[in-house]
Length: 89
Image (tube, rainbow, N blue to C red; front, side, top):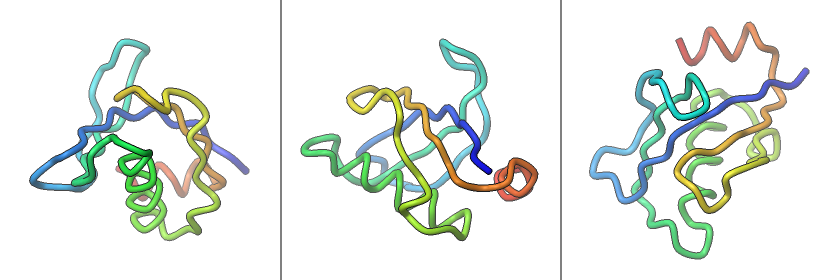
């Protein structure tokens, strides 16, 4: 099973982690903060690593499908939707 997830990334954050849900330009999205800068894809890699670790899945199960150069990203995650909802709150 796969799930689609919209996130808003804050790069160069002093407090990396997963925040709460917020209303974004295209609906509800999850707030994700990473320490890395957005250059050379470092922030995108950090997002994948952070979400995979938080969800307890392999990094290869998380794919950025849209917004690679934007703060607003769309992800495809190989996880059951109920499990995703439970782990993200």
